[in-house]
Image 1 (cartoon, rainbow, N blue to C red):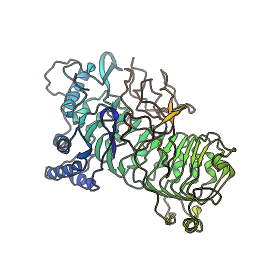
Image 2: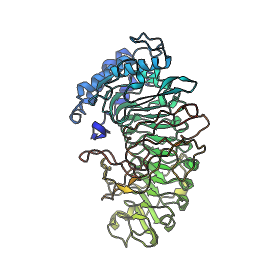
Image 3: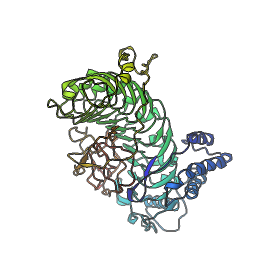
Image 4: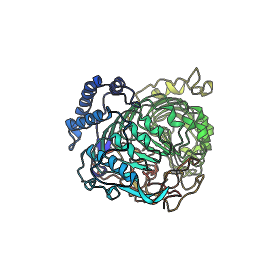
Length: 567
């Protein structure tokens, strides 16, 4: 697992033991939070074991302190969660909306174990709208009163947990807590935030199975859970929910690829650096109208690449590298007419790389190295004058090219090609890839490259070349300067196409819940996001430590959307 420390500086930690899911299961299903008192000692022991393995990397949070934080959350969540709204408080607040927000923020302040930069130092007194990181705006149904519309604690390096009282922030449209040291689980009372549009909990130390509570947020469009310690299966319901951005990379999710994966309406899906297995469903073609970026790098996916991938005509990034895909590249892939970054390296692919792929009009980088291709069109030869794309073809079975596999390594695979036409993903007779004759290159090291400037950046909604169904933009999109993809190393490790969680940005005080009819979020109001990038990791404050290479277009944690009704 990777996360960050002070001001977004990265650190690397060991992951929790695989049996953590068993411990959580013994306590009851996390969505129900049926904590059994008899199981508390076992859970506490597990936490102590888990965090003892992490202690050597946290200079500001010892294993005892980390365990204490989770234990405090466990004890708090063991109480009944259907708490009333009429708590006794020690200050007078006549506005019921701000009164509830005060209860939530006071409880959250108490749940913070460490705040090294005094980010919440002024979270005192009844004026919650003056709290650092808290944003208020007039209520859409009563312009005479203010409500807490969002909380942004990005990059504050706060250690603590999320209390159940956060369910009182019922007017919030955004909750940004990335790049902190929050521990434990996502509490079920978050489901009370019916207006929540963006939830960014990335770069923290959350554990347990996928937090299904986020699927009960009716207005949610932007979900960012990357760089945590979540584990277990991805719920099929995730891909039925009308989200615009799904970032799950760098966790410990391990399950079959959900059968309904292709039904997602998201424009960006990044599930890199997990342990998702199985094949890509043929229904992936149903994403054609909405998908802009698909990053499945470094999982354990297998089978043939479905020809329906070629239907993704709006996709600009397709990264399927570091898996075990077999078979040939379908001619249908030439339908990826807008793709700029195409990466199928580090798989078991065979056959000939067709020239139509290398001539695709918008192609910038095409990596098919570390496979078993035994032929490539002239356009696909690196430095070819017939293609403007940067092509990488090393470690294949190309007789006339340098830096290729030996004939001894190639023969067992090339002589037994996989017939991808015999079965489809999900059928009773799935394709079995040919066993590898030699070990696969080691898992990509989780370290980012030093980015270089480039031309443009994609923003949370569909990129500039793709119009949103309903234009609700009231201000310009984020800046468009971004670094180019990093240089390829040997073995090459192209960056995964998604940025690390964005740094703290100040959202404007204008937004409100989205209209139910909108399938993707409006373009964000301009705010100072982190330096953008083009399909690679943005610059990091530290060069001595590194996050996993989750590159891609800059899909920064956006400010709250602008909606009619908030002025």
